Image 1 (tube, rainbow, N blue to C red):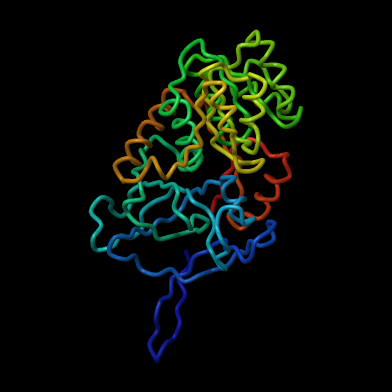
Image 2: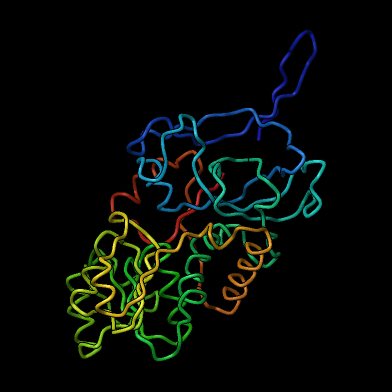
Length: 339
């Protein structure tokens, strides 16, 4: 945040500026632009947050490429972050200046300082670092949603996790391992095999064809209990067609790195399977739901459910470089932007 003095109408006025990363057009990382913008005073129900860490999600890349929403020239990118309250609106009672806070699913995160509605924030405990919080909001919440709330992973179950070296995939694999499951990981290259093992996978497949063969061997043809899928596209159909999911099993599609997930109803019915593609906003419709969910995520983190969180750090100004790295398919794990 920068304070500039301008002479307006013969009077010196202080103008507050903040660095943002805005999107102009749809396409590659080159449509992202770093610029300074005026920062207004918070409205009655708003909070001003000086951000300490901003999460990157593959959602950001999909939005930038035009797969999520229509083009809005000048839109500030990003949906999650963590920081410190620096000002509050007249009607805000839940937070005070100096409070540590986080949020998810609120457009405009790629900013050094931003305004946000108070009911979209959750309190950030003192023992949770800002970068860990930015890594655990969308991704940790989604992993918890998959492996606890939607499918209560139990000891002894066999779980298949695609994108097991990615953001949500890595946390989901760790959480399923923590809960006692046998995890089979799927990654896109040999270079990511070791990371998937580090995330708890006892066996790792390179690509979906290899995964189908591995599942058949390890489950003696019975299929896994649940698939947590970050690829999307026709992944569910392929796994159902060859019996990689047990009869009555579940597929939870949390991502779409390969395209929007789809499943043939006939294939689902033949296997007696459940296929779910959860959207996080449906589970945080109120401030109470958001704060209760994040409290559970942080409790799991304290207990070791997500392992050590050490995200790769990029300066906020280098957001385009982060996007390019992720889309090169050589990136792995979790990344954050730091103003």
